[in-house]
Amino acid sequence: MLSYKKEIKVLATSKMKRLFVSLSLVFAFITLSACGFQPIYQKNSESGYSSNQYLQTIRIDALPDRPGQILHNMLRDRMNPLGQPRQPLYNLKNRITETTKDLAVRLDNTTSRTNLTILSEYQLVRLSDQKVVFSGKSRSTNSFDELDDPYTNLVAEDTARKRVLRQVADDISLQIGAYFTKANK
Image (cartoon, rainbow, N blue to C red):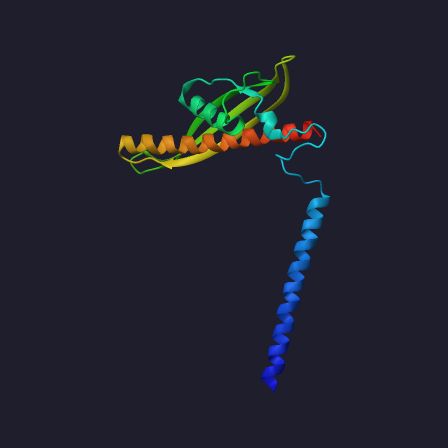
């Protein structure tokens, strides 16, 4: 008889917990919708365009050196995957700076770990009047081990560089997408 009462009490407690969790989730969703949150790629009700469609009107300037070429291609993949627009409305000018910093040094005074940082400063220029409508910076850092084999070091540095450039490209496309979402409200 005593165990039956314990089972009822345990069942009642678990139902209360589920009810509390459900009500908390409902409250969280109501609060989130009331704060003005909206998806970045949602179509604007007035213009009928999403920020993704505005991104496809941007011509991305070519960048020098191999890291610049990689960043250019990654930006094109994110902003206009169908290729450069034929009649662009905007031009994206970009300048990247790459720095390395030794983190760890062995007893024989050689580096064992290196940080690779890439800073990208960019400007979005409206082609109709050559006015800079948005500018920003994006920075990312990644590290890699330096070993005794030179080829391994080249591969590790190249892999870290591609990871950093991917993060920078994601950040730039999100910042410009957020600009278009805010500008076209």
